Image 1 (cartoon, rainbow, N blue to C red):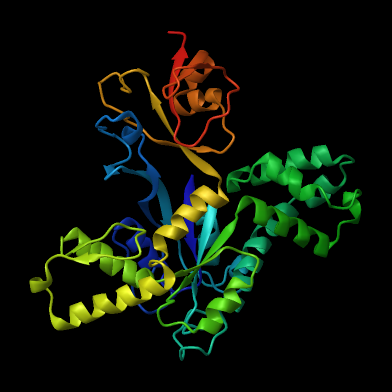
Image 2: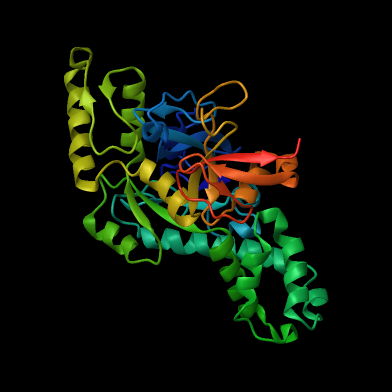
Length: 391
């Protein structure tokens, strides 16, 4: 699972990426600062089950802080997108190729209206951020349509939608788009593919985009954006989260040097080394605090968690090898946290751990209840599960 951070140049994409991951990314006020994609690890928060069992955990893949497990997710920050990117304008083809395996896209939009459609700085409030949403929809849709149109004459001569579905799945598998998503996208298309014109193919590509590359909008620079712009974005058919990536980056850097006490996703922080801050820094932090109160945080962590838990419908499950001690072979207590699709079964968890464990699955045990559960048992968020497999 990969989260793609997308948008036109100079809207705060790399700042958002750096804030979410604390990974270094080149940040500057000119287009195409990012050329090669930046990759890093962000986190989503979940309650750690060690509090239920009254034990001390020692996780391997997801740190635990004050009873909260921080589960890693991969984040990619790609080159900025400009109009007609699907025709190769700007770094368009590279941008689109870098998005192939992203499961969900966080679209960073300059809600302050201070960058034009090409990503160049302009007077604050003079650009309509809704235009940025529309053009990104269009570019990704054209990208998918261009792929569909290759060998379309061959595909259009097929008589059954099932055959079309299979061929389109083969063509689009490299984009991380699943066969069920393509089946759903094809559902309301006209019966005879030979009659599908350019407009119908665009509609098909649009349906595939919505299902295979879902979007949420980070209304960035919300601390200087007008209420009108924020509200205009919220009227769109997307989840829209007011965001200040610059504030989040400042807070995480201050927290990393122990100047403040701040947990990502919180709506406040505590200054703990005021004597090491000058008057300008203190004033800046208080301004951030004021805006955090207005928007219930900086929005960065909320964007990531909304993408994972709401859009991708993930839950957190904790596999163990000893359901009584809650340990793995090395004795680590509650060592791993896995993000699973809501509705996943015990057998699917077994395959997630290792293919051989899935193939040799016998049964599973719910560590909370100590009950034996079968292969088709649907997992719940926070489950602690032992998988029993043939050796």
